Length: 356
Image 1 (cartoon, rainbow, N blue to C red):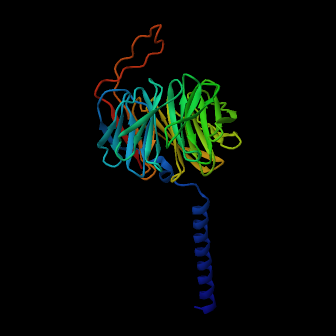
Image 2 (cartoon, rainbow, N blue to C red):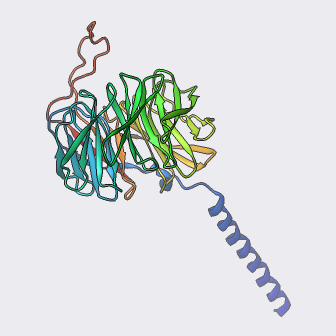
Image 3 (cartoon, rainbow, N blue to C red):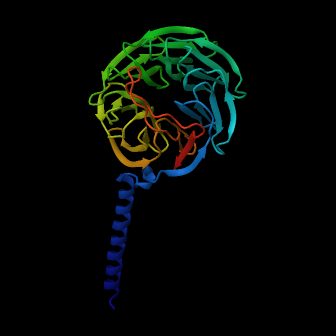
């Protein structure tokens, strides 16, 4: 065969191979993550009945120290984040709603809704160090590393209490103009808080103790959970009309409103996977992938268990911790309780762990 023909054929084959390799590289660079990598394969990896008395509200994971803190009405259960064994308990937290952690000073804080206090405890020993007063009905609680303050958001007095994390002394009170729900800190001196009765999102200066902006969350209504992508300045506000507005943290502009399940009470964002989560009391976990700071794609709705409305995210393993229980029949409405909830069956309090 003519050598020129052979060389021409090999040149053509080489060009084809080059084009194919180039196309694969470009596709890998420009295409969104595959569904499994983007969170579509989250599934139940552990179910453990913890039992014990008391209701529950928020929980939080200390990914570095490998602990999970779970509010239980009058005390806080502490679990090992890897073995799920109970490793401690923090007593005397009447009506506890949330837990905030300040690892840089080795302290944790709980919001005690029935007695209008914060319990301060040692993160290593779990020993109670003291208490601090708050406004009426402290619910959400968050530590702000920029101001070194802990903030409670008080659902009955419609304000926030700022507490110096090192001394436990109250630094001031911030009127909010509505009933606060969950809050997050951006690490730069701003706090963000949902007003559930006003359908608004507040921006708060943690040093000046003042509201600096108020943004509508429409079409979202009844905002509860809140999470933040701190790098890209995006907020995820879980609303009770089954929407999760994604909001620019600097302008307040709503970018997208992914649909979520019914009964949301918590949201989370994982910077390692660019996934946002919504845990819903109906028994679902919605997962949304942040394709870019301007584009958000729902990738999965995972079945969990009825009542699993609050969660904690482990930034090390990317696992999601949820808690719930088995429930009895729904009571008849009364004038005092027109919208009753079904009672939890004693001894059935359960930990659910979801992972990829």
